[in-house]
Image (cartoon, rainbow, N blue to C red; front, side):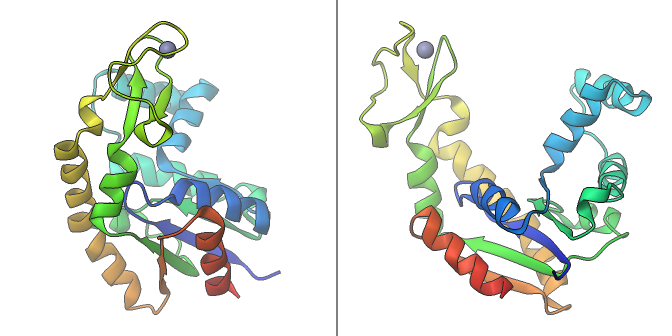
Length: 208
Ligand SMILES: [Zn+2]
């Protein structure tokens, strides 16, 4: 089997996380996102984990150097011998600079227009009591009651202004990272419109 070091990029709502899982199962290589690596390290209770926990508890972002260090250690684990999938990292030029110890074989960018992101994300509702997530696309409306008795609300984060702001950050920060990888000729754009399997077929085509 070929070595597949795949970086998966895409705006919120692109289905990137789902595709990363499907690809991980198909290629039998691990997939990880930086947030998860940090949470995993904290959960081990190691010295490094305690340090990270203290940073997070102060409401400070983990530095790009610390994040890159975690990734470096993760890539030394034996389950990455046939490759790995990096879900949404590096997402800006500073993170790219810190990620100087490895180069992906493929950078796959899942493209969806902003209106589509808004449509997919904008319908998200959250139960104010149990925290369950639902969608207006499943017939739930703001103010309806969840099975736990709580009310369905739209979180500030899920309002169109907030979604637009995050999409703008993604576009501004990630475009230069993609441009850097373009120079290496390893970037592949995949159309993110359609259902999960259709998008997954497009990704598999890129890898063949
Ligand atoms: Zn509930």
